[in-house]
Image 1: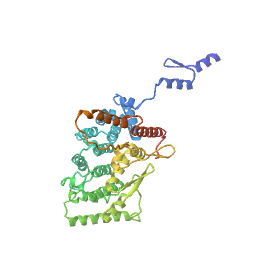
Image 2: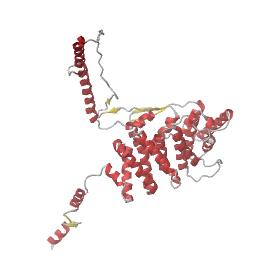
Image 3: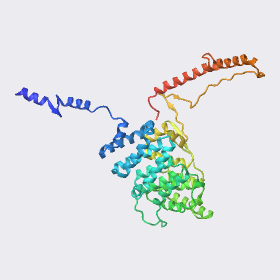
Image 4: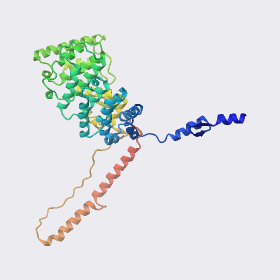
Length: 441
């Protein structure tokens, strides 16, 4: 009886597989799960019928593009990914929609193809301009997607300004600023930040004279808001407007009236900062390291943007304009701190935007300076000798050609030796790069 009971308890059947113990069961089931899924497998899962499968795939791809960039994967699958993500935005669940929108933004900032990212800009703008999807613009992730795609994909200031106008119609729907808004402060803050982010890419003289009239007055009203984030967004927008040095594009007032308007804004900022007890001591934005209200006040008073800096991977990035500060804040918010550092260190598009060249370090902390281009040249002196077109000089001409070939193509020539040294140096650098364990973040 005990033997039968022991045999019955010791052996368990599951789906026709005879397992002795629970630990063995878990081990055997693990063996039947197959190899670990790759990023390409999750890419295929985006076409799955089950929403849970698509959401898992989107979540995995989103994390991979944020923290690992995956340049080759993006370039190979860019068009299909954008198409599938747009489909998820149109037909998917709210979770799918948010994840897909974020992925489109990541694809736009990673790819190095100008044609691909501009096509993505056109597709996203067309999709979100449709009546059924236009209300989704007030979703934070959709706002971020459209803004980032425009930042990297718009080919000229007119295309950028068209998206700014779309955002402005949501920010300021009517001429009467006393109209009660239905949007939450968080959504309004996001829309103003997106508008400012795109404004930072356009020279003031290129802006339309018609689209932005009344903007200064509107943002100055928001300065009295009780919401700190909303007030900070308004401060940044005003600072960018004044930095553009084209106030006539944002107000119909005369120069004297503009000065009065500027003085009133300064008074508002002083009053707001004095509520903290000290107008120069207030909380800093953790994403940028500076306080928008205090920095905007200094800028308006001094008419000069004070230099600030942030440390990325042990290197200092100097921010000398409001445009740079607004761009850094927006992209850091979109990517998160870890994702922003990763992209700043490895994304070529970010290097171009911020004029930032990271130093690569090996496991021992030594900086590896790898030149973008290195050449070997050799100068040969050959005296000028008068030549005549007669057949008697053919042997001499042949001998000159052989001499030139010997000096440039012979393994023992100076040029060949120098080329060999250069190749050896590049191989050594490649070997050292393979020893890199991580970046010094």
